[in-house]
Image 1 (cartoon, rainbow, N blue to C red):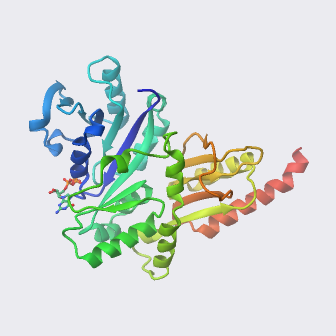
Image 2: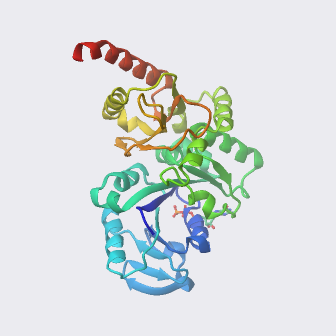
Image 3: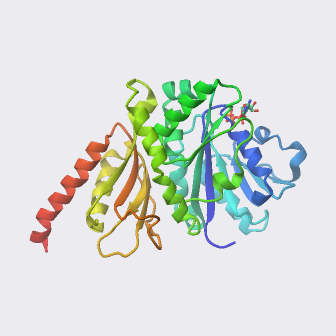
Length: 348
Ligand SMILES: Nc1nc2c(ncn2[C@@H]2O[C@H](COP(=O)(O)OP(=O)(O)OP(=O)(O)O)[C@@H](O)[C@H]2O)c(=O)[nH]1
């Protein structure tokens, strides 16, 4: 395999079905060459799948997958796994899946993969998948800020245990999750998650699947549904109500320097509350669209698409923010552009 190894982050509140989903992915022959980082071996019930214990932290499964427990910090665990791979102690896995604890904030995990110097040299981010329990999910979104954050930063959402919840409750929670994160496709699961390929087989960092994935970010059906739902909800105490998802659209071509400085200042001052930014820029003087991705303070190296994914040539950025409105972002960018236009002739 060539290129950096994709890393999928599997997040979701306590008991929401992360391990069940992980078992489902590991049982799929198409993903037989995966490595997974988990907290305890016991969780995945490895007994009859076990082929060989490599050392106290790493086991090899009959499927060819590698299972590794996280000791100490995540960065060390990923580097340790890579070192064993390079030394030939374990097979050359082509994908890494990290299952977080139910209470974890997923963004520091994304930060480790995106910005830790050794890791980002060998690995790249893949999809973040969030499981949300159809029975307890609404209550968790009400009470647990981390539960709302997990769903807000996800690239894919799996609404689990739909067999145990009333259809109306499932529909209401689905609408709520779509409002929270309209850029992420959502599936319902009653002990039957979709094929692993659908969840992790394509992502916006994979050159082959990037255009299709970016088209998904702007799926208008989800955004329209989300806006309609927002108009009927007024409970500001719920954690997901402080999170806003919107698209910043810019008609004119964007000056790369102006945009870069503005984004840097925004993330520097409000990065804690800018949960995710992803989208396309139509940059002045550049023929192809530029893909931008950020998570809180971390900016992923921009990349290019060979062509626009649809007929829309405007710059479009999906923002998922906490306590920052669309109007504030729009005004801030417009004001910054205007200020720059005033000083640019003087500096030239
Ligand atoms: N009925 C039903 N049960 C499910 C479904 N998904 C998961 N479960 C059950 O829910 C329980 C918790 O699932 P896990 O996969 O262990 O959840 P988890 O998120 O890994 O849990 P923690 O590691 O404790 O955070 C298990 O008993 C699963 O069998 C589902 O879609 N339907």
